[in-house]
Length: 87
Image: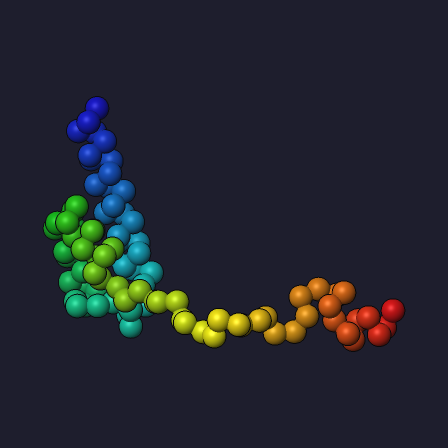
């Protein structure tokens, strides 16, 4: 049962990494071209998929905007002055 679990985990990692690679825009792929990443993922099933997941694409970092950021405009009809004027 343990060996079957390792095989299933390997297949899931392989499929996830390949679909993630194919869906990634070319500008976000790092270190190697897409075709080379496909070869790495397929030839090194566990290691290649993990390398792609952790090092293959540029991750977007959350922007550090101002701390007192507030949403623009009203949130609901009772916060909208134009809506309240029409009542």
